[in-house]
Image (tube, rainbow, N blue to C red; front, side, top):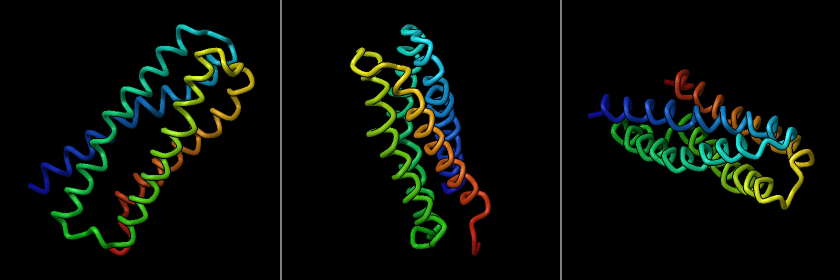
Length: 138
């Protein structure tokens, strides 16, 4: 059962977080250009895959529980970083993308901040991936 849960966890991470990382990283470029069609597509990808991405921590918790690892520092750190990445996406990336699309914020003005926040989102996921592979103390 652990192997199945771990496989689902890794697949969910690749298939859900990857598209959000790429689409979120591309959005600022098209915001600067004012390309509404591409921005709408990238925002839709980010929103849709963010919802699918909920499966990542669900399968992660299930895997951690079957391994008896829910109290280990590397996993607790990963959980905190995952929560931080989710909060950035939910409260800093997606709303700003939506405001740019609605014309409430000029894309040129929002692009730099979006690029920075999306970069931090990607960095947090990179650290989580490293922790999942290295598992300090394991």
